[in-house]
Image 1 (cartoon, rainbow, N blue to C red):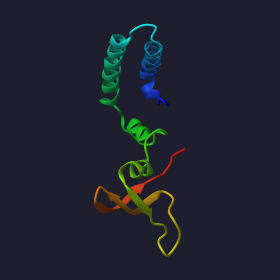
Image 2: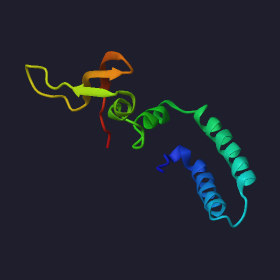
Image 3: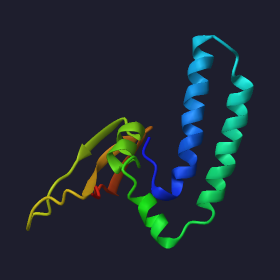
Image 4: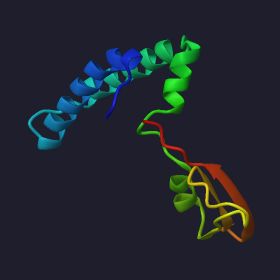
Length: 118
């Protein structure tokens, strides 16, 4: 898991949670109560952090390296998807995904942004 600078307080909680889950899975000791308590702390800390973001922190979140991209959603929502390319005048824009797909019994046109930031 990648943590941004302002998310660093969460990192220690997630490390602790991972250790507790390992102990619980190994069957050495029942850690379910401690895991639930830590999950509550994580939820409260996340709320505290995300309720008070600056404009730049919001931009950083929108560019988070682990944030799902358009193709992720398309692959998980559409039964069928045919991606369309090019604009007849210049060339294909790698940052825009567009095509025709099927969600349940509905045919849809999907256009999404797929730009990766450094």
